[in-house]
Length: 186
Image 1 (tube, one colour):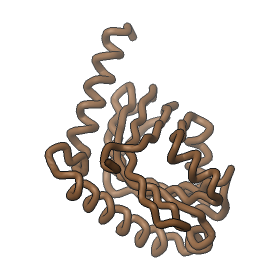
Image 2: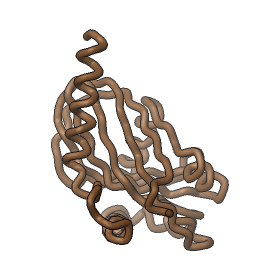
Image 3: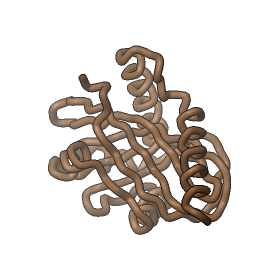
């Protein structure tokens, strides 16, 4: 695959991902965007605790958590994005964040899902908020095991759950994901 084709494909996937992200809220006020994120957070946490009862003990002991609504598109390359909120349970501080993912894969499709991160301690939570978390193939495997085992334990201070809303994704990919603080905190 030549570079020009790869760049055009990645641009197309990124554009499609943003178009599919119903919560992108580009033309809504910051208050409405935060309200949408907060509603998605409440729904995801309720669903997590209902669908995975073993997650309750981890949630109760977690220093903080983060919830992201994600849209991912795959067609030779994979790209996606989303937004969410990280909450420090000791202070109640809410930090609104964005995320983006991209990489190479074998497959095609689209998927909408929610990611819930539970952070075991203050330093792991703070590291996520201030520097983000970059995930690759090994982190995807950890996240997959955590989801399959219903997050029975913290792995390196984090438990990860993926709650699928809709979509079909037939792929094997190696991608990187980056999380960062959004402009909704201003």
